[in-house]
Length: 443
Image 1: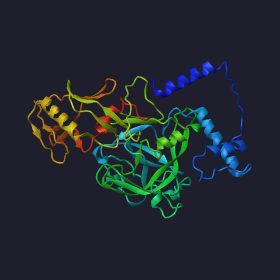
Image 2: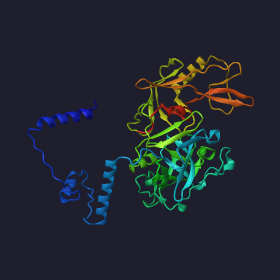
Image 3: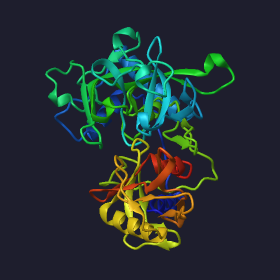
């Protein structure tokens, strides 16, 4: 029993014992009465700050009352929708090497709506799209082999529902660098991949979503969200990765997920599931099937700031290895999986030993250290990789390799895991194709 529950039980027991000898009375006070004002002033811990109190009958007075009513309605009614998904459909797609091996979805933004093909990234918070471009990736379909239409650039001036976010806004993290609080809020995000970033201005506009209901007139929702007007991209974002924007699915207040929950539209959760063929689906507010296995997220520096899980051990075949426990970030926006250096060495050495082959080779242009050449009559049996989670939960990665093709077809394969500095690993897209069907997303 938690301490909180124990205290609650004790308070209930005390109340029960004293019920015969204590009589309780109550009075209803208006929230803006003089008695409430005096009570609020007496409870204020900062005497230098004047307690704001609207004048009765003023516009501020009624705005405060209406705002309180809306908040109470959200608390009573809960979420308006069981789940939501992009207005163009819940389908996600994988576009292969041309697009960095990530998963994408079509979304509609603004009024009139404009479509964007955004990469889905559980490792970051902000939704940004190419906008009033100074330095952006090519958007012509002819530049990419797997597109049948051009990608779009967002122009806030062309959307009647767009609003600039000022430097005084609570979501503006760069406010201190602004010359004026009324100035448009700038943003700069540096990503894990070296020299890869997005920068521009924060904008508010509407994201078009669907609830999937049968009454078409009430199925579409225009949800106000904060997004990045990505004026300048660098690194991987100029060479095929997320050329039309990135949809951050993280826990931060600026994320679309947090906005939808605050508006009372859906619960603060989502599901992102992939199939072996690269297809998938995404739902906001979904908690997944009741039959699924799940593991809890863990704190990082005392906070839930990202989708961090605890891996207790790694197993190769039927052998679970010592000194292979680590914390890992679930990140659909990273192509492959990264293990802390010591864990990586233990895992790849055991994998290499279990593979029982001496044909280790290097394939030019590929980053992996442990690669193997194969022939038609000597395909080795690839051992499974299993991740052990708390409460005896386990997840088996049956195919932990990346195939390498040559002129004559399949030439070999590599163990698709890389080392990383620090003690936080990353479970990337190659693994989360399977893992997102197993683990609970959201909180």
